[in-house]
Image (tube, rainbow, N blue to C red; front, side, top):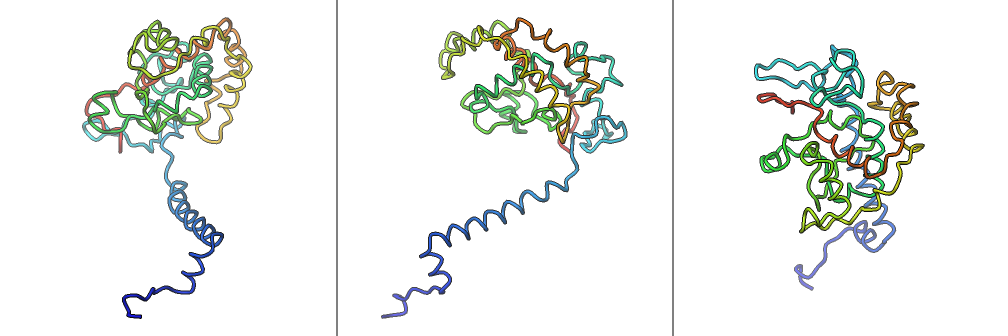
Length: 265
């Protein structure tokens, strides 16, 4: 046998390739090590959206045209410094805020129906995406999203800047019979949402949980005991359709983006 016909391998290589179990174990170890290398450094990065109650804290370092750091309360709504003190007073552009009770119910519907499987909520900083969807997403916009709805697949369009693009009536028709307004749509009909009442108990429980999350909890100065207690009256008579539309109309209008500001430092 010539040298060209010889198979050069080590005993370990032979043993590994002939043993399914050993190959599986070594593959699992390699994947685990790779995961640790990728994930561990994240625990040592400064959180970009956990210091909204500290006016001296600004880990995000958003800067204006002159290089001056923008105060955090320009990005994240702080009732203590804002002209609008309550969720009902809040106006688009006041800064990132938690969802209202009705929007929270709508978000629960959005997750329950698997809308995130076909729609993302993350606009990447590429020209084509900004031209189609609007300003790229920043981390603070998702700070109260538990879990995040960034998504990765776009069978349908990205929804991160959906607020105000269409009327409530357009959304209602689109959710009930999508092809009535978008003939090429492959989205399922959701007409039955108009007849299903909001799950009040689930929504109230969600509001309570949001205040005790281990990171970026909703401040109890916003979700006060009084607000949570009054959620049932806010949701009275509302349907899943009403809630989902309210949620969709809240996406992407929290921050007033200004020309010349670097939101990615």
